[in-house]
Image (cartoon, rainbow, N blue to C red; front, side, top):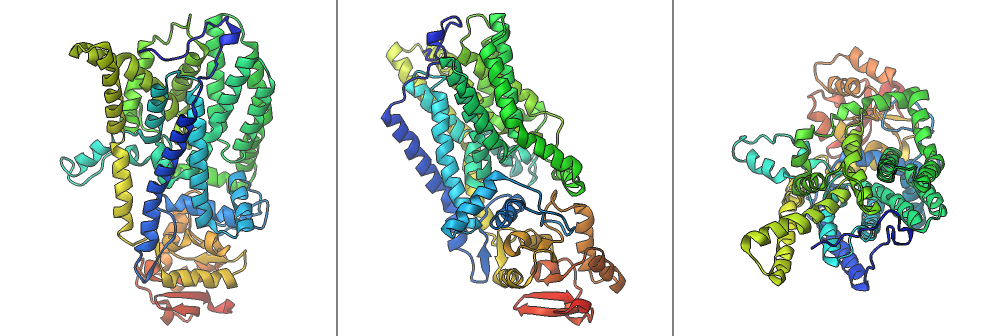
Length: 565
């Protein structure tokens, strides 16, 4: 039942050779990718086609606040190479750069496609590229086609035991979902990322660095390290924090090879140096941006506002599920301290798996992003556990013949994949239920959209628009103006701004309080619609301090009377 590639460390010609992948397998990968993409497009089509006459679906089905942050960058990069932070009212210079959204904006400009259309293009292109790269990576670790396909499907569909928490919500916990992040964290969940957070799929392409380094090691050619470093540089300008994963995994692999061979692996050492020197610049830029610029320094501090961190160690099985448990069992069963005779490929997987326990608990507010990609070594080890331990043990208990045992192994693999997919079935179905409410944040009233269009035509880039968070998060991407309140991190002093908005629209606020908010942040426009009226009953129409400049149905735009336009 053993199908892994094994190489003696002294046999250079046989080190880390990938298994041959047939044309049928590549067809399977592409067909699977297309089916998954078609299926995950259905919630978006539902949102567009089923929207009530007075509502407009805004093109995002999960984590709207973060996506509107990216779409604000998209708008800024459509006409400039650097972006200002428009999700906060404070004036700031355009000094931010992100290669992914710069490229998306420029391609969208050439094709005449807005952020919603380019977002779907990102979903499709990133998914296809990632799944092709994933299967190419799996050919390093499995010679057997069945094993490659099993690992591929585990990466694609595997998830945690979140479905158990959902069952508990409707039974023993009386409507309360305990540990909700263990259900909804997208980083280690490939299917959920494809569904609603495709930028994580695009970020996971950092794995191509590993493929290049392994290929260079097999051929003893450092030019592959140069290619790997350049690709890491390319990826770093999109997600600088992923460089920590790249450096951590390559460093762990180098250490394990050194430990096994009892001599420095000079190729790997030089590769790490080359990759690091070529790719460190986006990380350096990010450090300088968030340490030297006062506004971006405050933005970084506010990452803690989300309260999203890697779950405690004892809850990792809940988040990562059965594949993680099988991977952990396999990794321990293989005796992680015994390295003699272990192939380079096995060492790489071990290093990637074990170092991730360190990466996901780094003392930084974005530690949860380090989960992105961990599902790959988990699936590799889980597959080895299925065919090396679980299926043989069950077959032996049932006293099966060798031929029957092979068929049994396929059944066991299918059951593990199916069981590991249950949470994703819930997440997929829940998107339809969530969208069927036809409410914020996925939908806006068409009158509100009309108000945003008016601002797009009339507001200046430096103008500040005060509104509820429901509208504010859309203001930068839709109008190009500054939002008073838009994002839990990008809006400086988020909780202070949130309180100010609540106070401004409250009927108990005094004229002096409203005037101070207007003057302190140079507010140019106030949106007053259903979301704002829900914050308080103050009738702005009856307030002489504000003059309406746009009125349509339930949405009105006011300006302070002193600056009436």
